Every structure is written in C-alpha cells, then in structure tokens.
Image 1 (spheres, rainbow, N blue to C red):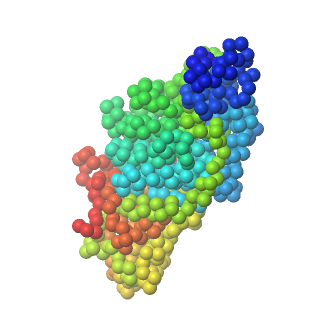
Image 2: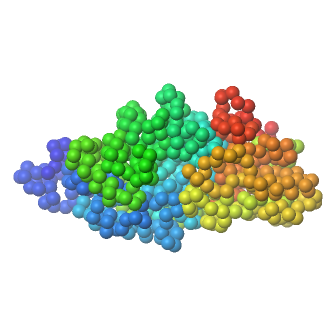
Image 3: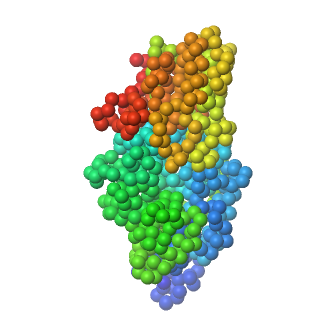
Length: 613
C-alpha cells in the first residue's frame, strides 16, 4: 500500500486514478500502468518512498551489497536483488575494448531489470586518471601532477571527459576523486593526492562537478566518490591502511576540509578509508561517519566501504557478523564484498532479525542509495549510451590530456638556460621511462599495479620529443645511454619509478633512484653534453646528492598516455607553470616533511621555475 506521504504527493501530481485504487483498498501492484516509483514526473522523494514501501528485507539487503564482477552471475544479480557490481583494478571483459565493456554492462543491467521491482544496478570502477582500466581510453596525469597545475577548471574538464568515456561503456559510478592530503611521501598512494595541504585537494573537488555534471542525470553524468574518509594520507610512517595518530583538531584542520568541499559540490558517494584514527578503524567509526560526515557536513549521498574493508575491523582475515553489524551501524550504506557477498547478506539479515541492526538503519541506507539511482536517471535510461563510445581515446580528450601534462610539469633546475631546447637541436634521449607508456602512466592503468610496456595506445615521451622537434632535427635514443657522444647539443634522461599502486607502493627505503637509472645518467654525463633529467615518478625522489651534476631537472610526475605534453615544455611550446604540490625532501631521512615543519627541504612547497624568469 502507498504511504500517506506518497498519497499526498500523488495528489499534487494529479494522479487521481492511483489514489482511487488506494481509497478502495486495492493492492498497489494492481495499479494500471507503471508503478509510481517508475514515473519520472514525480519527485525523487516520492518515487523513493513508493519503492521503499514495496521492498522486502531481502530486496533492501541486496541493494546494500556490491560484489566483484568475476564472482557473481547475471542470474544471481536477479535472484539476490543485488544493487551494485564493481570491477576491481584490472578486472575487465575479454577482449578489453570499450564496446565489450558496454556489452558486459548491458548484460548485467538486464539481469537487474529482470527482478520483481526492476531496480537497476550501478556499476563502479576506479577511473582515477581517466577510464584507466579500458584499453584505448585516454589516461590523464595522476592527481599529484594535476595538483602541480593549480588549475581547478582543468580538473573539471578532465572529470567531464572521463565521464563521457565511462558513459560510452555504461559504467555509471566512479570511485574518484581521491581527496587525501598526503603528508608522508613514503606512502604508496602519494600520487593519488593533489597535494600536502588541504587547500589543494579542496580546490580540485571541481572533479566532482566534472564527473556528475551540473546535476546528476544529465548527459554523460556519472556518480563521483570522495575518498578515502578520512585521514588516510596522515598515517604513521606512510603506512597504507595504517594509523593516523593525531588529535581531532589536527584531523579537522588538515584532512577534513576536502570532504567538506566535496559535500558542498554535491558529491554522490563517499568511500571509507582502510586506515584507523587513533587506533579505531574508520570502517567502524560511528562518530566520524554518522555524526561528522552525515550530520555535521550534511552529506545526503551514500557511504560505501572500501574493497573488503569491513574485513579489517578486527585485524583478522575475513569478516564476521560482528564486523558487518559494526560497519552498518557506523553509517556505511553499501559494502564492497567482492567474493563473500552471500555470507554478508546472511549476516546482515540475521543482525536485523535479532535487533542488532535497526530496520531504520537499513531503510536509511536504501533511501540514500535509491535516491542516487533515481537522480542518475537509471530507471529511465539504464543501458550504456553508446553514442559516447566514439569519445573513448578520442582526439579531443587526448588533446586535453596533452595540455594537462604540460601544465603539470615542474621545472626544478635550469642552469644556464639549457631549457627550452631549440627545435633543431641534436638530442640524445635515454632512460627506462623514455619510450614506455606503462612506465609513464604508473599504477591504476589497465591493471591495479600498472606495468611497464605498451599496455595501451598513447604517445611516449620519446615519441613526443620526435613530434615536437623540427622534422629535420636528429633525435637518437638508447635505453641505457650507450652511443652518446659530444656531438649532441643535449642529452635527456627520462628516468623514475616503476609502476605501483596502493599497499605494494609503500617505500621504507631512501626513495633513491634505481641504480640502472643512475648508470644511464652517468653515461650521458660522461659525454660532456648538457644533461636534462626528466623524472617520471609518483612522488619526490631522493636526488639531492646527484643534482649538482645535472644541468636541468623536470618533475614530470606520472603523465599518462600523452607524452607529447612533456615535450611541449622541453621545447618551449608550453611554458613550465607547474608548482610543487608537495615539499621536496633533501634526503629520505627527512620523511615525513611538509611545509612549516621546520625542516630544510631541497625544494619548498610551491617551488617552480619558468623560462621567463
């Protein structure tokens, strides 16, 4: 039966026939035509009220469950009323093409629509620098480079371009942007941060508007996620999933402001951090999730756990009924349970029936989730919008990415104005990152940790140099630097970190360059030509001891697929305008180092040279 609140709204809509059925006591499901929750003329609230009135407990538990695509079948989506499916890092259909992604998404969506109530799923991915799991998609610079650009409008454009490429594949939920404030460069997610001060990620919450559009449900609108709530960039020792041991005043001053900004911009979902705050796992922190995020900040979207995040509440592998209860009561609305999702449903059902989780909490979670589904327009347009397939890796998006790469370059040293190069200079290029899309794209590219090699189409930095230089100019390349001599006007060493992502990317060593990279640079120096080092890395590296022997140093960060943007700066087609989003250490022993902490850096936060003075 319709609730009194829905009846009142239907009166305002003029739907007298529906009310007549209610007046005569007819069951809701006997109404002619579509049910009210399927009527786009009604308000979002009225539609959600009506749908909730029709849902059983099992319907509601399904909506709170998010399995991984490899561990659920279409038939199970229908049977268990599953509300969302995700691709973890590297989880893709075969072959990994945009068209195959659209086919996969539509097949899973048809399974959801085959359910009794025809509630569509949302499909989530980590499109953290473009639709980066799809071969052929445009891969933009990682956040640390975008932080160096200081350009919120650019970040909004990138969000919109990413949303278009996602829309073509059907994927409607992005686990981005990451709004962490990285306070220790040893952390393996440093490159996912826009910078070390809260003002930088806060200003870059324009990504939310880029992804979602002016409002949810518009053309190429996908749900954005502010992550990871809260304090993940402040763990002791830069330990991923570690403990942020700071007073609440500091947590609020440093780590909370970007989330406040994202909520003001209408972000649709928030993901909880694996980390702890003063010993308490965030996945069970009722105060920060319920009281601070939902009540104080006024967040009206829904909260999602991280991948198997509830498993770590008690420190043991797997999850228990107690952990499920603790997470849901803490305010988590949807739970990523990639493999053991049936057991999660069983535990949560038992917790509700035993009174450990109140039904009001289940209804609140469902209201938040269903509201976003209605706002996204999924009930009206649930399938992939294949008109956007043409944008995947398209020229316009690659042009935008090239501009973003150029804006993110930070010129750190330029003795005797060795840069910019002249178009007709004879140049020798070397280094393991010079001709390698995988190296310059880093982690979260095609696979979770990323990988060296031609993993997706794009322009390497070497390709870019050859494009930007005069066609008659001689540009030679040797990965290890062999073959260089004194006849060259300059030598460019493109070196840095091998790809990595969270957890496996944590470094407790000195953050120095690989010995092979150092030997390559030494070969170039031995030729007695100006040596320009282009550093491809997700964080500052320990280079102070070697820097006096280099004529120029450019921090290129992780530029993605459009390496010509690096060349644009090397040749002066674009001015180097990037400024450091993090403090650059003098040596690894200084970590953690941040502006204002009294330590003397090699380069301070905000540093960056230009060609004009």
